[in-house]
Image (tube, rainbow, N blue to C red; front, side, top):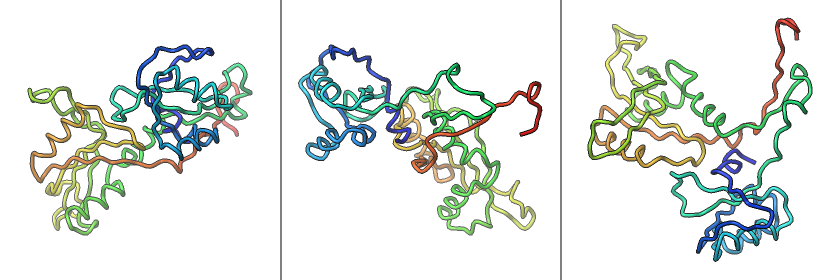
Length: 260
């Protein structure tokens, strides 16, 4: 089960009796984790589609949670900036991780599930791990500018300035994840560290299908209209093939030394 299926939003607090506030109609998106865990949910998805409607939230809870023999099925509400026209996601939650007290010795090894924040940071690390020439951006810039990759150098800034605040027509600010400055290598500067700037890219890195906040979209669209020397990029990174958990050991140097 991917991190996208595990964490599309905040969980609803659903009592065992199923008594929850009503809303009509109540639209529920059937997420992959729920379909894979319960054959009834997968059959429902194939029959009516990925979004199903009920007369109320209580009706949806009764039919999708309490009537299905699959522990761990829960409703999670969409994030405030989620563009999906649904009231809840039906997901299958993972079993909770052991408490620190119930785990064994950390020097022997612990296993943790990958969280959404970690996966997001991993997506950004694919670019921020480089100070110069991150392979995807180097390849993109070469194609965008119609030059050979050996003719340019890409400088990476992982702390670009915020955009906005002075435009009265657009609310909020956008803090790009990266700025990429593309410089041409010249005869006098074959390294390209100080070469002429061909283009600057401001980029937002999103993992999976994560959506944009309203002010982000407005600022990015406004900035993209300013001219050919500056471009705004949306980079979506698919990490579905990445491990869903990771193992580690933790040892105290004072107690265990540096061996092992």
